[in-house]
Each structure stands twice: as structure tokens, then as C-alpha cells.
Image (cartoon, helix red, strand yellow):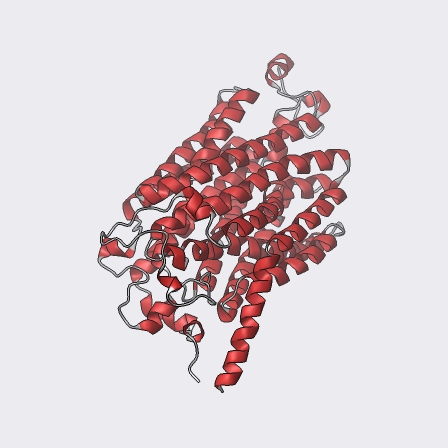
Length: 501
């Protein structure tokens, strides 16, 4: 018995290797490190919160701050009467950044599909680096402290940094097809975690000289990276004369290898010829509209799920060093270095889970199993003893089961959603869909950061972890229709294979 087209699978590794050129490797590395640098500058703010809080609080009420002379000069520049209000403002800045970042993602995705992705990405990196320099370094050098100025700079920074993720995912989606996408994007999505590690390392190295130097170093490196991206990044294979993804050059098997996972396997062949975009003989198809992208299958459900999951993931990103220092009394530099283990777990989790989803040819069941384990790991980490080795191990496990699914949704699944059969032949849907998914996730993360600061202040850290467990469970609930559908497809394909034998 002949198997249906959906069951003729070219091995992911063979399909990946046969199409890989040195251009693919360069694109992989440039997009990887460009977003790593963006995340490193964000991580710097997370890692120096204790130092900033000390600087913004009067030394007479802050036991960790050095005694400053003359007292009148310090008294005229402090922002808050106590450390609690300073901490609450830091949480407000996180919320402001994420809200502006979320709003920017919806716009940046559309802009990225209509302008040169290399220009948009390079502009975002260089201009964001300048804003970070003004925020953390120049204001400290000039001894200029103003809450509204900080808020305005962080709004602008969020808008500028939002150009990064839609652009890099769109470029990666242009170069890498479905063959091995889960593994490739799982490995590549470690860029955020690598950026966190890089930011934590750079901040801990220069923090003894003052938190302003942590901002200076990361901003300088990010600006240099933006210049390299402008002169070196190729946004699509056609720029060097290579065939675009989906081109029918080597027969139906290879065409199937490039077909995304989000296709409807139950649909008739005639239905698959339908496209949101009319047939166009031009080499540059029109970009998909925003509302058309929202109507694509799976986009809304994954966006809502990512809003809950990114809330948890970014709470660890923004608050983990502060939690370790505040809850266990560890030094800030030691807390920064220990927080790296969460990102290490996320890197391993995203890669392994992406590879498993390639083998199964389904994403949602892998996410569901990982998130169920994440609930248990969160409960265990909330009761971690005051031991750095034990804390690091549980932290890495938590990062594996939370960071891994977060990386999959924001990268491989977003690419799947942006290259469905309904938008076949139009890579210009990738940045828009990615912006919708990541933008919705960032709205959830923005709300979450303020809630974390409120819950921690009024109820304590234990209730913060209960809140994380609730949000993780909500993630599974939102993708449950997709989980059921993909499990049914797996069982159906298994029955067909048994009949074929």
C-alpha cells in the first residue's frame, strides 16, 4: 500500500546536510550572535539591580551602600526614600520595557516583511546600544538621576530592541526549511540564553568598578555587532543565487522536506493549492496582512500560550539574580554567575526537545510533556535549600523544562506558523507571524513583571512560585486543542504504517 505524501519523510539530518553551504553557516552565526548581544544588554540591567537600588537609595537607610561625602550631594541625587520603593520602580521599568517591546514587535514584524531585514536589524542594534549607554553609563557619569528620564529611555529601548527577534527568525526561516528545523532552531534559539550568559559574565567582571561600566561594555559590543550585521548578513538565498525554500528542483521528496509542520494533513490535495496570496509571477510576493496572519491556524493559540510561558521565563530572566541575592543573602556577583545555570538548562532543553519534535514531526506533544515536568521542577526549586550546588542543579532542570519550550515556540514553531501551506511561496509572512507570537508573549511578560514585584512584596517569594506554576499550567491549557489534534495524527500515521507493512 502506498503511503500518503505526509508520511514520505526525508530524514532531517540528510535534508539539512544536503542543503547546507557556508552561507548557511554564516547566516546562522550572524543571526545567533546579533540576538545574543541584544539579550546581553537586557541581562545587564537584571544583573545590576542590587547595585542600582543601592545607588538610588539614601546611604543612611541602605546598609549595603558605602558612606558618601558630602552628604548634601548624595541627598540631592537619590531617587527613593527606601530600598523597597527602589525595587518596585525597577519592576516598573521591566514592565515598561516589555510593554513597549511588545508593541514594537507587532510593528517590527510588519516593517521587517516590507523593508530589508538587514537594515532593520542593524539599525535596531546600533540605536539600542546608544540608548543603553545613555541609560546606564552617561547618566551615572553626569550624576543625573530622574525617574521620568529613565522611563522614557526604557520605552525607546524596548521599541528599538523589538526589531531583533522578528528579523532574525525571518532570516533563519528564509535559509532553513522544515528538514531538521526543530533541531536547527532549537540549537539556534540558544542565542537568548547565550546572550544571558554573556551579559552576566560581562557584568560580573566589571561590576566592582561600578554598574555604569557593565552598561558601557555591553552597549559597545552590541554597537559593534550591529555594524558587522549591516555589512555581512545575507537575508535570503536568492541574494547569492541559491534557490529559495520550496523551489521544486529535486522532485517531490525534497519539496516535502521543505513543507512546514503546520500543514493540514487531513486536507485534500486540491485544497493545498489555495493560498492567501494570489498566484504572482513576480519574484517579490506581497507581504501578508496583519489580520490575515492572526487568522492562520495555530497563531492565536500559540500566542496566548506563549504569553503565559514567557511571563515565567522572563521572570527568571529579570528577577533570578535579585532573588538569589535577596532570599539567600549571596553576593550580587555570585548570584549573577549562578543564574547562568538556568540558561544552560534552557539551551540543552531547546536543542533536545527540538530534535525530538523533528523525529515525531509534531511539536505540541513535546511541549506538553516538558511543561508538565516544569510544574514539578518549579515546586522543587521553590523549596531549594541554601546550597549553591543544589540550587544550581535544580535551576538547570527548571531551565530545561521552561526555557526549552519557550525557545521552541518563539523560533521553530513561529517559523512553522509563518510557512504554512496557506502562505506557501511567501517568506514575507515570517516576520509578521513571529512579531504576533512574540509580541503577545511580551505583553504577558510585561504584566507578569509588575505582578511579581507586587506578589513578592506583599506575600513573599513562595507565592511568586505558585503564580509561576499557575501560568505554566495555563500554557498547557491553551495548546491543548493542538495537542489532541497532533496526537490523533500521530496515531493515524502509525496505523497507516502498520497497514503498509
